[in-house]
Length: 125
Image 1 (cartoon, helix red, strand yellow):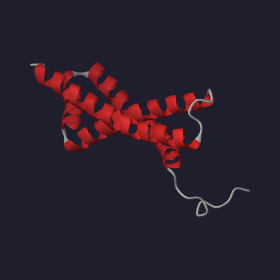
Image 2 (cartoon, one colour):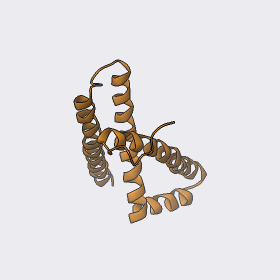
Image 3 (cartoon, one colour):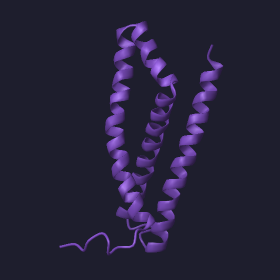
Image 4 (cartoon, helix red, strand yellow):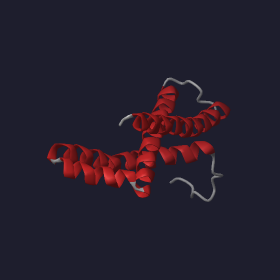
């Protein structure tokens, strides 16, 4: 039987493992947003306007940014695990640096994607 969690000292790799699971669940739920978008596009202009109105609201923007971040974070976490499967950077110091890189990289990439999306959207009449 595994020791209780209170015995272990929390580490960044432990937190990123938990975050990888959470982002997987968030992506599962975020698929409902994608499905809503596809259904709205196929139904009518009014249905799409309702969807777009939701995305333009602050909760919609927050959910959309969270979905983008979860997608990128989960992808980087998957790449981190793939490296470990090949025995690359599996020692403790390297694994910790890679976990931090996953967290920082996902935040930077999500922010860049967000800014690029808003810039492109501003150019569309």
